[in-house]
Length: 389
Image (cartoon, rainbow, N blue to C red; front, top):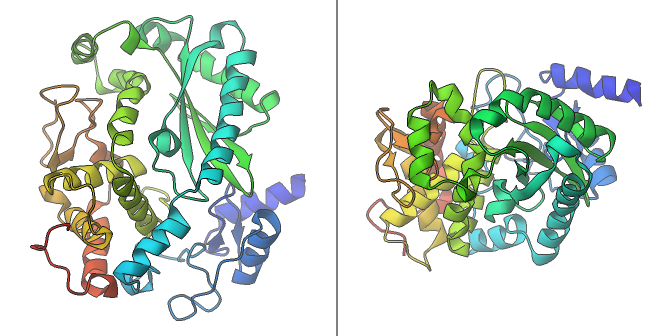
């Protein structure tokens, strides 16, 4: 087992030699040739993905492709979405992206067991008063076969963010120990605010971020919380409030109609198939900015419940292509934000958080969106003036 792990560690360090990777396995597993990746998919995950030989290097599958040099260099016409018709697009989303009832049930059961483990087995200082599901599972925007979950662990023994901040390093170390030793998790990393684990789930895996926090929404008004954040000494200090505000993010996204969530899934899939995962200094937009851009553009179109998915996709991609004109903010939780950036998509839960800042290559992303809009057969006959219906 040690030699096998060492082998995959070596492969992750040399992606130029092993350009094909599994999107489900954490830590990532990479392969030199498409048949090796295909055999892995069949043996470990019980799936077979058809080869699209005209679009990719011989034998490559669209879910496994990475490029040796520039992760932005996949052409728009190579994306499997580009040749779909409007009718085929709806069928594709239903069959390939939208989780069915059984999938949701199995995924939630796995994550629920992890929640129960923490509630019943974490000791003293780590014991949660509540665990809230965030991420794509919590918000209802999970893509079939791959979904992330953020578990916000509200600690019973802490009542203020300043209290938590002082103890957080030791809390994270202890959580990492208990999750790995007793919780049956593969601990994949740790940062200043989170423990990252992977849990198996019926042929794929879930990346789960465990975020210790304080349930200040139960003890303070939103106005009091934001005033406290204003008085914080730095933006770094304000980061400690992010997990505590996650329930407001869940409320904001989960309220959207099912079709908007499918458009979010479609944008996530476009991002996944048109780009290699963020590596090195390159940071692609995460799911949350894409969710908010979809919601913002949908609201700008009048919040139609029943819209043409192809047209909605076109208009959201157009918004991404014109990212420098984005100025999105919402007033459900606060009336003014604290962003002075020339373009922004403000977190509806946090008036200090411009979510566009998680990406440092928006111009490259915009170039890909423009190219896809220009060359994809999918958008034949769609225009900027046609609306979403």
